[in-house]
Length: 60
Image (cartoon, rainbow, N blue to C red; front, side, top):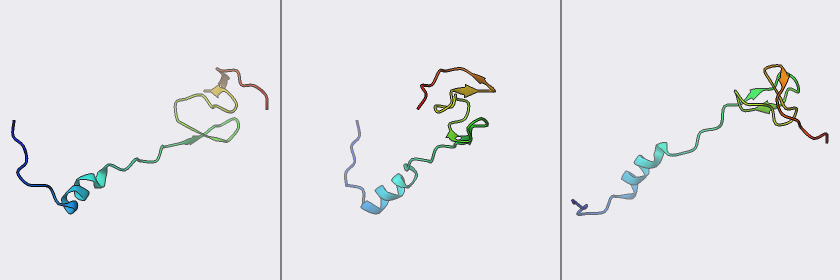
């Protein structure tokens, strides 16, 4: 199995890692409570999805 003969420079390593950063999550607004939530998931605050309650959330 071939092995590298010389080490890669820091610039070359940095260029390769330039695209490894985490992207921000795309969020949408809950139509019922207007809080931020992940799309296609039930709202963790009110428990509604597509206009109906799908999970019970304890009152705060």
